Length: 338
Image (cartoon, rainbow, N blue to C red):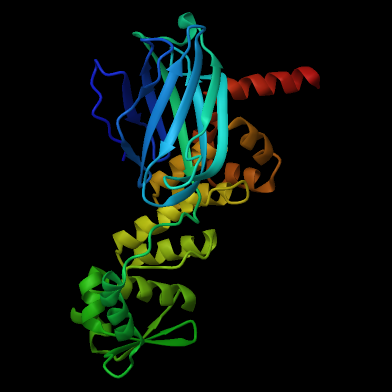
């Protein structure tokens, strides 16, 4: 979550408005001097912002990445008007950010602002949306940190001391009741409660693919999972719900948020609504409501399917898109040209 020590007298106020978006409230004075925000954490990474507003009211922003790894990210900056609506002053950049490589920032020139349209209580408000790529690289754990994970993983691979077997999608998996019960309250109830599985050595599971159950066990034993794409993460999130694994659910939802593209966003919108994934839903709506994205999505069959199958989601998408003055301008120009 973003955080800031700014107060009313500070040059900047940072406010998180969604899982992918922040609003920077930037003080107009003094003009023509470079200013810097406090360090803030957003999306699991540390950043800070520098800005300069020239005497001719040109707005320049620099976003610095300072975490000890690198991320590939797409960053949108949009100047808001005094009523909180999106203006035509918009800038997008996609790049790999790294504290150890230059440039780890980019000059985001938003153009000229007008005090009568953009200034409220001596400040301008800038909406910043950061989409983190799913292939973000992080520092490797040292050998000592990995030793326990390796030992627990060896326990999973060892069949000699396992005391329960699962048959899933035609494949057999060996596991340990105590480990499963420690990690999952559902497994605890099944394996040590009054359910029939408590007295069964081989449990047959329905409604789950073998590769998903294998990854579920990997998470239970090692707290790690692979990332095999949107559909895989969706199935794994469903398995996390089935066994009340909140940590796994969060990882899957984070990865789905990072894997939003024109090809995945519509199916992810329906999935998010079905499985009560509020952060994923918000991220998908932000992405889909971007003017250039929405114009491409409306010609797809999946868009029509969303209208029919998830009318409440479609209503939210329409509401968010209609709030964008930029989108309204594009539609107007398109009709005029037609």
